[in-house]
Length: 594
Image (cartoon, rainbow, N blue to C red; front, side):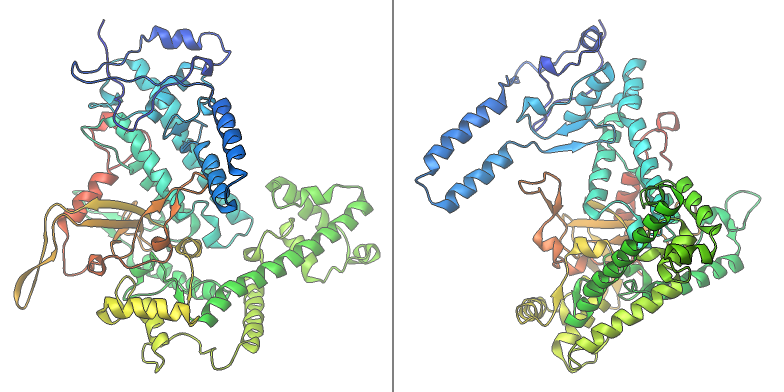
């Protein structure tokens, strides 16, 4: 019988399941056995099989034994042991869009998903093993390729569609633009790693995986959000007769860019965080997280005041809807809830439009009140601050700022930090804004001294990077890589080495706000700040940022290579390799593009 290789077992892999994992559906186990699966090892290589007992009973007995022995121990030691029990009873797992679980280790047989079909068996196999050398794409048996598409690739495309639908829903509900994107920074990394693993399985270890499908969706999501100034496909263009050059209508592009600038100023005037920093507009991928106390108060406390006002409006609107519901014998409260459908909201809007002010007054509702006006305009309970009109947002934010300015110490409230200020701390904060990723006055000692000293003296406020990312409009996909060749530059003294070989590099890939090609993005050097993740605590097994990354600790300031004057060929090649399919056109997966 001709056998085909569909996966490989490497150190750290944990493929396998107990016989009880097979579901009750007829034919599941028979279909898997008809495939005649086997594990092939080299003659000189050992092969180990782990037999899993009922781990829940084993763990419960272990916990009981430890509990008895802890009665005579220090309470802090007992607390640490209890934490270890909770951590050890969990499995490092990743759930895909269809519910398959990728396990980092087989710590519990009970946590293995039930296998209901041959499709589930293949999905489990590919999620818990490494890619074969040539990949699934070159397997001659169509059954294997078909199950990869059905079990893994089609669900990830569905996941992209679900995320886009969530963006549309949030925009329709009036979320602010930075709250419309449903993924946080570490979730973008997890999704990228998952897509890269799937493509690695498809193309094989010899070719490697890529994130082409995710990048295509990511650019479309940024366009859907409104991060880009215009839709490139909607801009008038003229293609040369030979198809080599494309001329974009400059007037239409300039008009769109002008509207983008007006929108940015409106976003800041209504309480949004200013996105411009650094030496150019492309330095806002990772916003600064060091602020003067009054800046942090304005940003954080002002946000809570806005939320409080929105909650107050929501409560008032629910009281109005209850009165109307009792008067007209309609369940208007349910139809107007934030989570309701657009049809129910349109129905509420139509009902409110046909009620006269006199009838509302008899019920006890003021038709000229702000809460009712917002309710009548949208047909739903207020979803958030972004659902207010731009004029109302501006009035609310100006009054919130006035309250905070009046409550603050006049000596401490000095507006934006200035680089020419006499105050040393203010100059440091201004440096972090104007030169992100670089040491203060080009000195590591001065930077560390100013950062830690000012934080201890409560002269600055450091906000977590994960919190700042939620206020950033320009989301990005991080691509780590390692430099294999030195990067050379040239100045008046002759050639010089800018970056040595062997150093770790990083690229932050984001959508271009002013695209002049389809799926046009930008890639910025990201090696300046520390970039790593850690596993969660006993309450969560998801990845999160380390302390150094949350603080945006500067790791390598020389890694911030400017895009001008130096052409980093290796950076371009590394990014192109990770972002493009690794096979001929007939092998390319749906959703991927070059």
